[in-house]
Length: 488
Image 1 (cartoon, rainbow, N blue to C red):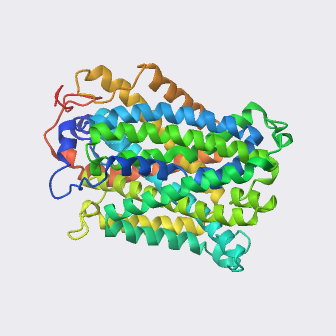
Image 2: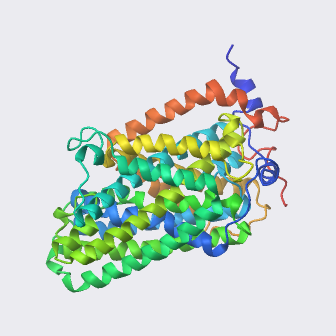
Image 3: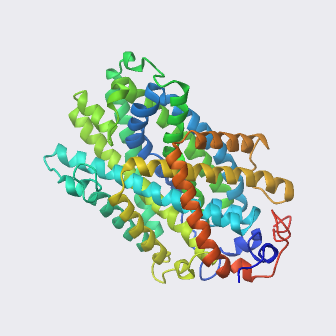
């Protein structure tokens, strides 16, 4: 017989997880090792973000939604992302545990809401990973064609696109990085550091090559689709910023996380805003916006203005940058899944740590195989919209959680405090809601279907196997008695 509503409230469904109990996860057989240095953390944040937005999404959004005003779209999305980053920074300094928004939600709203946001994050990371891999495949195809090697369409496109059967390069890159992450986090982070440095160097070279080819005529009309197009474009390119969330998923593996996490979060977002706005301005100044709707717009732009060597170089740099995004995104997805499994909301064996590699090998393999399948079979346009709506929903929950936790537990130690409370989180909530509303209706419908599937899994599996539900009962509700003591 299904449990009554009263028993659910008193058992697990609305029970919060004490912050002290969350911090206890940092030790024991299911704990992760702290191996990421502050410098590596900053590059992790940049590497998670710089790549797809610049080298893939910029051209599509300019051609179909914003025109040259894609510059404003990036500014608007960047401001929204910075508001969310300030909220995330406060949470991460208090609870430096794997799981990101899922973990923060567990500490403030209770288990059912933690499950909802965790399921949302699974969508965000899995689909984001697939989208980035599709972009990686486009650049591999472009790079190979520059040297006279042409992949057959059947192996370079998903079904239904130009005679495609499977996007094989996208599948292979995900599987290769899956193997790397299983082998060790430190090795993966070192590779990311090298790739990010190369990527930033390539962006600077792109600026240098294109500067003399900018024609202001290409910026007129600046807003061909009006303000509606600007905000719709902002909702689409928001995909480009979401990688900073991966920094929080690494919380349990970062040295001195209370100090270093806020720096990594806010610093990476600020740097990326400047890079995105700069590339968008140069790209639309060089090529008319209507000609940018391809999967590799930066390389195409350089080729069309006659800088063939530069196009080859940028394609190589883009490949490196997108590889970094795949690495960090796959890493973040596995840590979300790992945290949920450790709490019993997903099968517990996914929280097992490999004895030799000290990584969650089982869940990494599962995520790698499933996202490789999505990347190989679905087109880019379908994937990108689903990523955005999932991320925006997660940001809203985190911002709301900051407000509630400030009110219910004002004496908790907060190494970093979100400024201008409660206005920053309220602005984050409102702006995210606006961007969700301007997304296509079909994207909103797919998101609702995904969440309904998630709720079904929770009520058939999660609520029965929850580790929190098996512990002594706490008062239900938001930040109830199950929360941590005022100071730690």
